[in-house]
Image 1: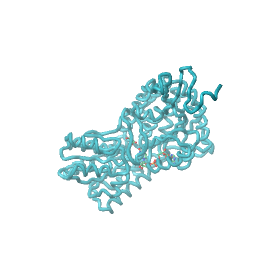
Image 2: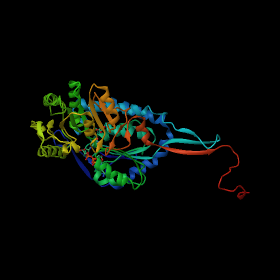
Image 3: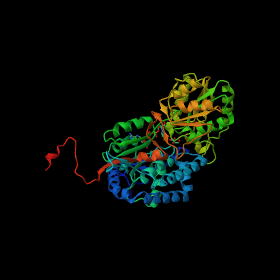
Image 4: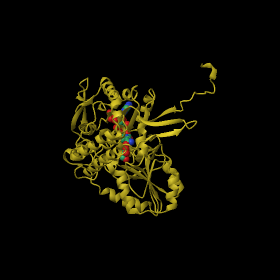
Length: 491
Ligand SMILES: NC(=O)C1=CN([C@@H]2O[C@H](COP(=O)(O)OP(=O)(O)OC[C@H]3O[C@@H](n4cnc5c(N)ncnc54)[C@H](OP(=O)(O)O)[C@@H]3O)[C@@H](O)[C@H]2O)C=CC1
Ligand SMILES: O=C(O)[C@H](O)CO
């Protein structure tokens, strides 16, 4: 693999590379370049140089390139699905769904051509006007995560490019090859040189440098809250605009009147989708006390039927890396020492052959957890879920809101009064009522509290990439009378 800078595929200027492991087998999958600060400078300079012409091209011409990229991705989608399975460990159905999402998002953003309009606002009188133009910011740095390595790249590249920005993409070091594959499609589709650049390398080494670079206008990042906070600090040097989609700790409330079968199916999805590695994953289960035991019993039975293993045939694949397995193990251990009872799983599975070295963890369900426990406060990002009985709806909402994160939440009930109470009181960017996620391209993916800033998707999401520029004009042609400037000063 190589870096893509100013229209050229090149090695890192240091020649250094980093190894990437296959999460299914623990074997080395390949190597990718460790970009240096000089490589970053060249990528940013290229993005700066390309900006004017790309902006002048107009949104219709840019959308044609996006439509073409979408077609190219669709044509070779099988390759991308394989890559997602090897690089991320996704099961086949989820890899296919992610590619559907990539195609959908590129199409969705391309459709905004000609639709990002400014306004003409009245001035102090009828011959004065204020033109409010929506213009691209300039250079966007896109830092993408590994959990949806294709979807997140598409969700950042498509709106940034459509609106006339140029981009430097730095993907997660756990999924560089998926990003490379997608960049190739955008290039083949006709993105001009310098408009889109790809640099890879450890965020801990080049991240601070990229986000604090004086030429960068927007930093869009999906990942952990700790990294998001660091980015805020570093990017403040240059006042870059931030779009940060960070951690989640979704509450999943099941009321006593809920359709239990639908709730369990949704919960299986919400907890074990991508092995629990999604920011909208159910992380706290609040069940009405009248149905608590029965619900948990049925949920445990259903989850115990999940097949864990080779992504080509399993229901759930591995975690992303060795560190993620260790973190998940520690969450379970700490929960047990806090008094939790393990109803299912709790450890790594015994898998045969090469899978024995893969980064797998069993679906894990815990009861006897308390609101203040680590397992109910910190983001697990793995296939582990704690459950707690609740009896009063307001109390359930209070507990749900008692989290430093505020992205997704779920509610199962048939009672419209409870639904509307939740619409009002839930302090999360998303509430899924009687249905699963994930978020749609036309929804605005955003969160409260430490989940971040700004958002993605919908017209609100695309407008994060444009700035409103104001032009004031007096076209009367008459002599100006300025209140605080005497007319007789100027003869
Ligand atoms: N909201 C979400 O969807 C996601 C949340 N997470 C959360 O984060 C945890 C850890 O995952 P991890 O991959 O380490 O997430 P990080 O937040 O560390 O990484 C996300 C992205 O930011 C980059 N990055 C890391 N450090 C910096 C920095 N100082 N400046 C700029 N960019 C940087 C990473 O690059 P590099 O990979 O090279 O470090 C990656 O591209 C997960 O367990 C989960 O809790 C993770 C992924 C997605
Ligand atoms: O970040 C995530 O996990 C994605 O937005 C999927 O919901």
